[in-house]
Length: 434
Image (cartoon, rainbow, N blue to C red; front, side):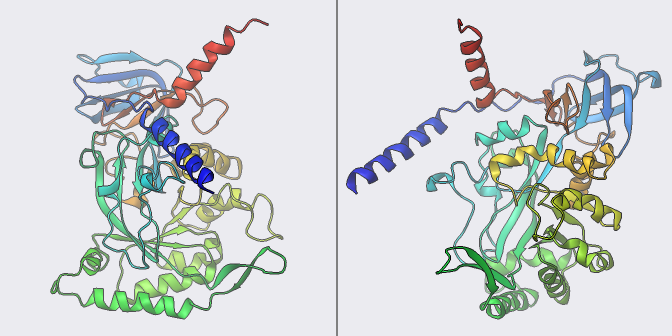
């Protein structure tokens, strides 16, 4: 046993040492001169596509977007010809633990979950690690903005929205403490059958007690005056004032209905449904309450054996057809696969969506749902120059190849650990003598 413990400790130290030696690019310097990108196919993010496009930006802000025939003034600009390439708005990733989790089985690199059921005062912002090795790997697919979200308990805490390039969390912040995250208790839970060893769905005997804990919290929060100081109650005041959103995490139809009715009964103004596996079944409620959906199970297995195998692929299209505002998030997917966000939208495009509308799921729709569409999500004058250039279709993993990216006009270094490994072993095997 002692040898096994020593071995485990040694492996953990080696993993930590590898992480410490990983290549994390230096944050980019501020934009120093006006830039004009010309000759590209520009995907605005609102469904508009501009051929032979021109986009200019200065001091981190987009100044003009149009075609070559529009006569956009590029005098005094650094003109970069990206003929035939595609320009996209930076993709927006909601509900992610990026920057909070590095190596799952090394506790020291895990700052995602707090103990206890009620953690309203937890702020993901102050735990966000701008030196995470996973950030370069994520933005290499065009994801340049992320809603970093804590987990654990029924009330997990406050998320914040970050630009994925900065020295520290203060510089990275696009919007701090944008919303509170509530995980509604399930009517059912998983239990391992002692005879078969398989998991089975059984009634959640603690459901009523869990809901009562939430009632007690919200009753106290609504009547809270600021004295005596209670950090949890203070952190929830934005829900009732309208300055913050409640991100309701629920998948089942019954859970969605219960969670929405609960929140509305306490005067919560802005609700966003996260997960939403059975959101289509309660679309009338969501429409009546003007609740958008961040759908997260597009590459998951069907919920029931009798569902179509491609049911999750079609769900974003069906939700939008029902009239709901829909975006795609990453929380139901392992962190190391959330960089595939553009390909989730590509799947939606293959199952009902127009290709530009599918792009909108992970750009303008996500930005609108998170409340940052005045800054990111589409390529329009006055918005941040947060965009990327791809050789091919960014939603198709066969052709997507990001050539460059800008965050607020800063030219981002996309070279990271994975690119270093690729170059190393390409050189090794290309020189191999048969």
